[in-house]
Image (cartoon, rainbow, N blue to C red; front, side, top):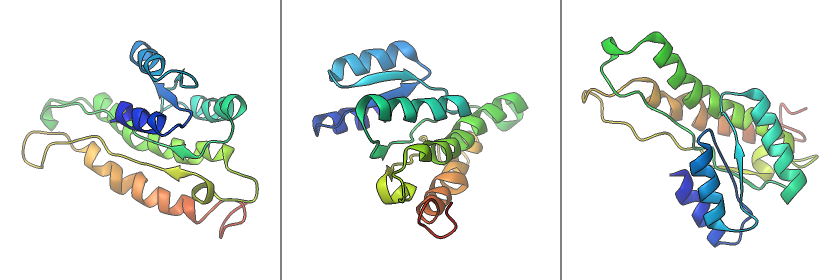
Length: 165
């Protein structure tokens, strides 16, 4: 899904920064898109990565106007076969990663403007199996846990917005 979004934005003339933990795939995608596409290693569960990547992007390419917050993983299998560590990893990537993207990515918002005032957040949940087919439980929580609610909250907070700083 992320590569399709990157290709579509690049086709419209956008400067694109691809972020992922899969360095070879990200590097190849950026090379295929041509200049000024870039690849940056980002672990969405890392607050440091979320602070560094938007700041570096703004410094190198100018203001960020779209954040396609798409990272997501799934650990297929029956719940009774999954470990708590596996469940936490899925929640960390799918929920915490999405939240960090919105919360820490705001650092590049325009002075005097709010996050969603200047930036368009394109959240997406990973594809999951319908209930009862042996899928896993944390992924369906993502759209409800952060993307929908946090994007709405992000649009009503920030500099010059109700509840903003």
